[in-house]
Image (cartoon, rainbow, N blue to C red; front, top):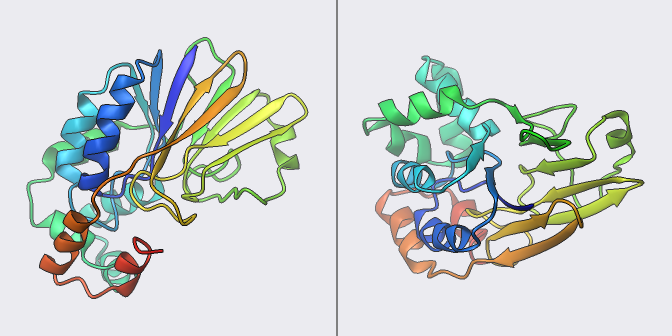
Length: 228
């Protein structure tokens, strides 16, 4: 059973156009999107179209997806805070027809367990499903309190493969905004042998940098993290 894991795309269309082709080419038995289509960059609607073309797809919400839905519900204070902290991504998205995106994200669960597998998928952690952080150096003893033998997580943007007793924990990293100084990544997992391959996606960042400039987005972090 080969499973392809990916997440934290964050509107990065230039990266995901390359990644999506690679994911489909893996011909995995199951593809799992671990959340955060929204946030940071600007190609969310194109990414939604690409996600819909990936076969055997399971998907969950991420914390930025939840924020997007809450802003759509009229939370103006959250919208203002988001703009000040993360830049114009949500503002640019809200200028478009987001009806289909809203409907798709709204239907996604916050956790996912593939049929027939003893797996828990969540964006954050089993104890804080959208906002929990489990880093490569975080304590992981708390996973022993949960019955699943495998945990697939996102949120930190750091690729990770760890184990504790008979349990293993995988984070594929981010396809939109890698934070480990490398390229965007996804993971391919053999569920039964527990072999994990972290795969890089090399893309031309100039298109994304151009989008940032055209958006007038002066949030320095959005460029700095790409040049890290």
